[in-house]
Length: 294
Image: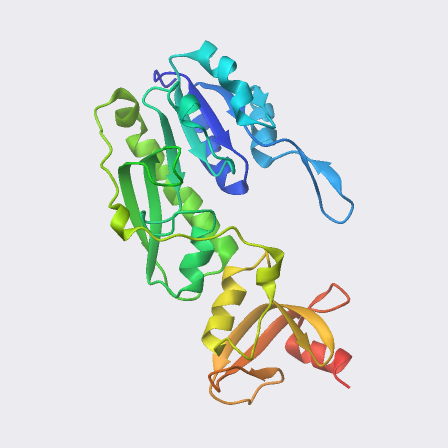
């Protein structure tokens, strides 16, 4: 059993669950898991528990789901001394709450900070055609992703990554790095170093409106990156021969020798390999052409 102090874990997304499982498997004493309230998802609007809640309950760990995170102030104070770990929680933590933790709250962020501070760093790395990304373990501050850094690990990109696959990869990379440095961070033997704010860049919360592929203004390369970066949400939407589709796979070519080759603003072609048709079914381009193109 790990003899480190109690940990209060903050997280909501699938990305968070990898770190929580890693902490549990490593024998850390998880005092409670703080996550967002259950939410309605899917076409049936079923009330769904966050995945970290499901994992916590399976291991008999208490779960806190405050609507306002300030509401857990007294609960946290009753746990002290306690260390905090936050991974993709999705809410800003006020400094007054951060100050209750020793040595603060330790955060896993999927970019090489100070690059891509904000909520969509993985998508941004793919969208901009970066040749590397990585994970950062930092000390949380009230200012978004601006806290001092304990450790970083870079990860090379090939230019073929999709959002879901890169999320999974960086979740595991981040968990390994977290477990490696956590004992020293909690004990104070490892001290974080300030970020260079002058080098900071920012990414935005993705919206449904970001899904549109616009051949009039995008290059074919930008469109292909969009499809890989926005897989799952907000998706990549295009109107083909009067049909609204979601494009899930494509490649770029200099000619239109392909069943679904769409010209983009740079004169090159986005050759669409797979779509989700208006029927809701995923299909290769050839099947779409046979079924929907008159």
